[in-house]
Image (tube, rainbow, N blue to C red; front, side, top):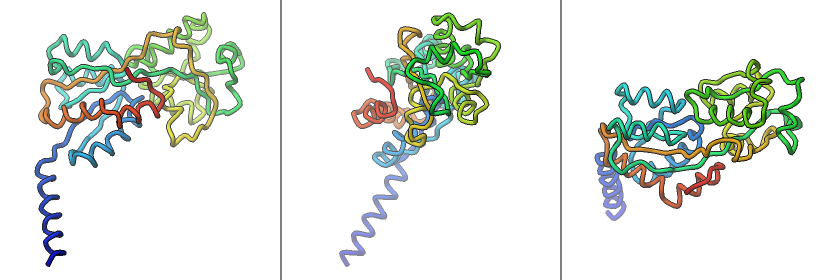
Length: 251
């Protein structure tokens, strides 16, 4: 009888969680996708809510939101676009916050290509292509262009750039050897799935503007309560530890 009672209680509890659960629709900059997937697993397990994730460049996601895309939450790779949405009245008041600080890395799939100093490898003329994200729509692309300009190498490289729509596509260009090296997010290089493959050089932070990445709750969210719970979860110690493990700083 006790077994039946316990089974009934468990079944009832499962039904209750299902009834209370909501699906949070998240737009996320592609550099943070792997990290957010990891956070989402624990959030879904701990709360019973579901999360549907769409990724892309911050600029394209921003444009989609302005044109009415049905997202609840936006994780941008910069401060600028969340701030613009806030000024346009599309963000819930007081929801904007910095969830991570990104780092730019020069990476090659060849473990012997990049040694201690990335400036040395960038100065070699024998290399054919350099991958980077579109600087107009992707903050990491803007950081890459700023780095090359700061090193006095933009003119030498600009005609040999393989430009990705976002940082995920940029990474694939290098991973598939379509470019010998490229500017990617440090978090991509530290992704456990990569297992330390290739070689990399962490770009000095004084060569590009800080990559503070901000998130917002969108004012037209259909699941505002669950979406707010998700943003609060990202601020918790458990999530911050995941964020740091993937190579980001936290404020």
